[in-house]
Amino acid sequence: MLGAVVAGTKEHPRDERPGDVAVIRRHLAELGVWTLGATTDGYQAGDELAAVAFACLGRSWSALAWASVQAHAAVDVLGETEVSAAIQAGDTAVAVVDDTSAAVRLTVHDGRISGRIDRIDPAGERPYVVVLGQGRAWLLPPEALRFERVRRTGLNGALTVSAELIGPVVQADVVINGVDTDAARIRLRLGAAAVAAGIADAAAEAAMKYSGEREQFGAPLTALPSVRDALFSVSGSAAMTLRQVLRPRDCTVWQATAVLDAACEQAIDACARAVQAHGGYGYLTEYPVEGTLRDAVSLRASCDVVNTRRAAAADLAAFSTAGSGKDSS
Image (cartoon, rainbow, N blue to C red):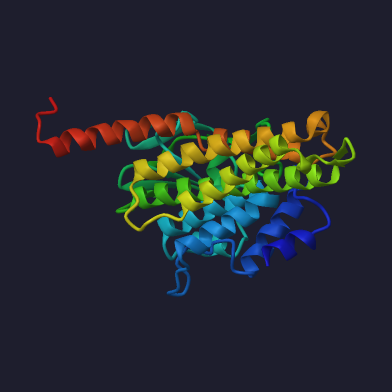
């Protein structure tokens, strides 16, 4: 179904046409896949099905795939609210960030929040922003924020911006208490890993197609054992990443972080190999494979994998120390 939607769309969603991005977002919502894994009318699709949808969407529209992951997480955090309903309908965009991210520079003084978030990728204009803390989240409304465009390498259509609070916001007005933020983090990170798998798969398909059509010494490139081995490595990375994303129910935050870290690195490596498989043509914008590499790099940056790894490592170390029964002081 998603393949048919992509094939039937005349123009690729781009930052220069935010209206087109909004139309596609609403169309995906009408098809029931924009927040497929979130609870809707008492029904919740399996995480595996949602992961496959993220990967399929990531193959062609990685910016919208990542935005869909964030919409899933936001709906789970917000519950049954008007904002949540608008997100599920695709009428409003949302970005979800972790307060441990280096991009999040918000402070609280006398019960008021101020500061800015250096980067969000909502695939929509004037989005809501959900900030995940420990056991609570903040829902920052678009009218309280000033947005400015941010340059990045890939994820065209993500409408990447910074978000700065226009003035101090009363924390009590935007806080959501009693939130399972660990579950939201797991959903975000495994969802992003699924998008990375989709990007890698698109790169592998492009490399396979090019190598099968390009002839050298009177035969396709795929006749060369070295080329076949390289193509196997590229395709294998995408397959292994998706297998890792199909998680068990007891996945922890640090395990989800490990999957995300590996998925982003594998996607970048797979896309780089796919570019190399094209020779010099791989660096030309006329060939879509160069776009997959840029998307993979930007996805890793958007997820702030470096700081996410550090936070997960600290949590893992604290858990290990507590579990050993030793005095952590």
